[in-house]
Image (cartoon, rainbow, N blue to C red):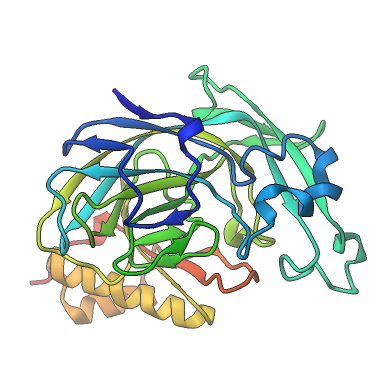
Length: 322
């Protein structure tokens, strides 16, 4: 199986000019090893006072979320849609979370003076029933553990004309979305703007709460197994996800209510166009169906990064209207 090694997963720009590191056929499984969001420099809490001195912090925006790629997918052309299936996702033996003044809603708050400092916390990862961290435990401290929920924070194709940062770049091509549902078993749909699609993957999290409130989750190394399929001559407004039992329309924007409305608009469009649901029925689902959900994945006050939401509908309701 073809693989991108962690030592090669050190790109910080989604850029069509990067030469492909892999060329894969449709349906071919491949592996990418990813470095953590701190580029491997944050391995203990002792580094907290020195974070601003790290070499990756000497840029604007700082170099964060190193990516593996690009992966060239045979048959993908401009105007197509790339379906990326996350087949397996394993995380490293530890992760970190961190904050600093100016990062997050409370980092300069006088009500929370304890948060007005540079801070790093290390989370240990223990193997689960599979013998790996795919289903392991996160050790927050001696009293608290939780089930790991590995996910991919950055996934995207090379944008059309722009060069976008892996730290703050977001768009219909993907980017730093920090969507908890981009996990093992999920299919991710991304627009294609260049031959081969040029797929990037990075910023794996071992776990993340809704909103990723202060901008850092359980940041860790990862090993991702994936495969791709090309859907010819199809484009979508933004990123879409297909989970085992539901579909999710993703959107990134500010303010939050605009992101929510755009995600719902695209979910309705998806239901009508691909599943034969009538516009009236799709609209009613959004307001009366108790299983309809709006997930606030990322809502971080950090530079120009947008707020990312997902409008989710269970597949059992995707029944054509008569």
